[in-house]
Amino acid sequence: MPTAQYREARTPVSKGKQLHHIEVMEGEDGGHKVVHHYAEDGMTYHKPKEHFFGDDEGEDMIDHVRKHMHVTTTKEASDKEREKEEV
Image (cartoon, rainbow, N blue to C red; front, side, top):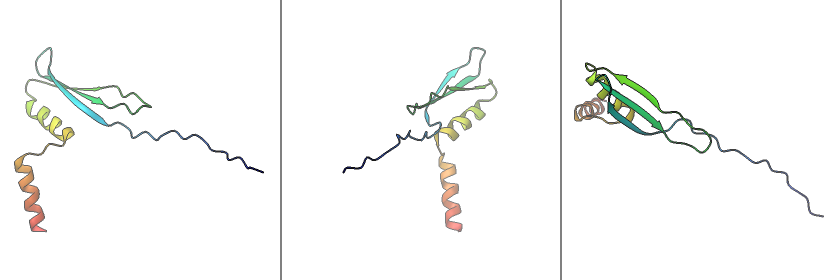
């Protein structure tokens, strides 16, 4: 006599917000607007997040984009190498 197996359907676990790309544009009143666009994981839509930087905040805007896009400068890379050598 065959026995039946009961199995539950599993929903894949969401990975959370995964940054897909960043859009940088000039603001209407000067400065810049940085928009973070997130990848859809099939379960949830993540609304784009906007950040505004004034005319005098160019350095902060560049640091913000570098941080989220995981970009390092040659100075930061050489500092990390120097730290490794010291250890």
